[in-house]
Image (cartoon, rainbow, N blue to C red; front, side, top):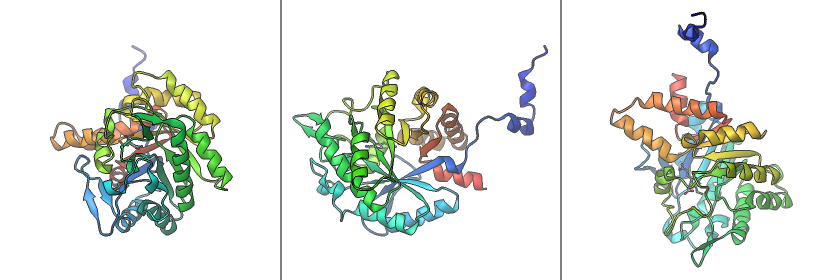
Length: 323
Ligand code: PBG
């Protein structure tokens, strides 16, 4: 035997020399859940270690994360039922707590990268990402609402808008609205290939945003398909997206690679709530080593071609790396 691949694995020093992929806190965007009020910090039952914060405590948490090197945050609001309606009008109310919090976060920490979520579901009494009429999701009418909330979020100072709704044409529609109002510097990270996935379950608990009827299969992608992801990516590129996102991450590593091989834009992957909770739940039972499973999952997402990873593990990773 002249060729022995094990020679390159014989010591930690050699293994790290030949290591192709490595993770850094700089790769991560930390998704966080916002609630109204003050002095509120409530753990999400299905996501151990992840909390809904009121803005005052979120500012503290962000500061702590920044000290650990995390520089990018994606904030999602949880709204009470009483503020939801069919048209998601609360999403662009200038006095709404989400917009006020975004403004305050960006003002307090101008150097961080602040991302927001563009979709109707947290504000929709139907729990859907589009306007519902006669049980149908209305694509083109929804674009108007998405543009209004995008402008409101851009005005609050966010760096990156994340349209997570999967309506056709929304990236171009939002881009045009932003440019028209002078927000040419506001970036768009499109949820390009967002699948109709069971792995969003804990997130919908966190935001109380589960659909009130039906499912999201007429707008989110079929998990059986990959070619559709290429069509979505071509559209998002042409419509002016700055990042292409694949979501979820772990069951869709092939899609991350497909987009990374075919597009020059940076690829982002969303390591979603269910992917987080699966590892947490089995680690709690002692069924696997949670820390190693976390590192291995994040590494595989990066190896597949994700430049940016949105993950609830961001802080835990930073704490481990710092020790
Ligand atoms: C909604 C949205 C969802 C997530 C991010 N934005 C859920 C959904 O589409 O129902 C899921 C994130 C996660 O599971 O961590 N627009």
